[in-house]
Length: 346
Ligand SMILES: *Cc1c(COP(=O)(O)O)cnc(C)c1O
Ligand code: SF4
Image (cartoon, rainbow, N blue to C red; front, top):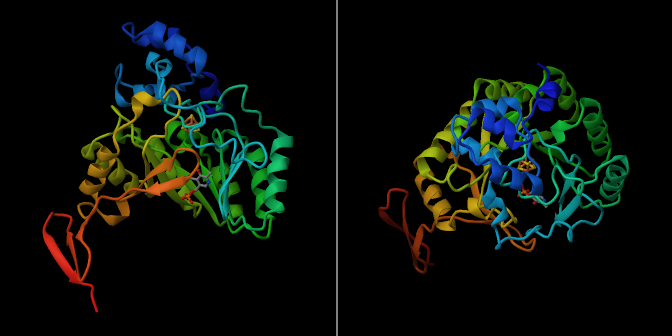
């Protein structure tokens, strides 16, 4: 079945969930889906095994989304940091360019839940032209991140139009695509798409896997095709309560990603996005996970743990503390907890 047909067969209501899981909280699903869009394509739905399992929690709407009284619609102040609609310019040398309003699944924890998949998010030729124009007249921009929504939900032709326009801008060094498609709809990554993408190097893709159960044979072949097109693959995982908030699960995920030729890039603390408070973990949980990784697993598997600062302050790296004492001698603990020191005074 083609990826478009799979997408068209997506679950968009509680009824379809109930048919497979009669015990599901149909009313909660319906209420949440009225507020935030629901789309679970048949591929991802096939990976869900049980009510409230880690994949269910990412995909199926929950009444908890409506009980969040703590978080904000746009916690990273993206709208305020957008010089033109759908282009966020926060850091000096790079921009986040939102080129698609659609995703292959609407993740319940999405940071852009306020608009992704809704009528609020208007992306058309005119908004894309304005974004391209902004990049053209802003020579400080060296790195363009295409995101959305999911850029790989665009047709090959439309995506190629955007890539060609960005690539033609002399001051743009690299292009990145942020996409969850290799995880949630890997069959979209066709050989034709990869052949097109490789014409726009240097091109990087950061994908998004959150749980080892997402590392299927299909996902592995999608990543393999992209890697064979010379595209370096990174992964931006989000720490999610009840989904992946343990050292064992994260370790298995990161090792599996490396086997699929994907290099873990970020491990994100959950943003304070309205409707996602039930997913948030303590910062301490992430630090404990980082301690369980650093030194214990291949350094290639270790991502940067970061918090995107509320208000749009940018990503703050969070690291476990290894230094116990500074001064003439630097005293520190190694990954096993042994005390060591280094003479640092002259
Ligand atoms: C995350 C992000 C980037 C990219 O940050 P890197 O640390 O370079 O990956 C750029 N712009 C915005 C608005 C972002 O949120
Ligand atoms: S794929 Fe990304 S943008 Fe789309 S719903 Fe999921 S987290 Fe949000």
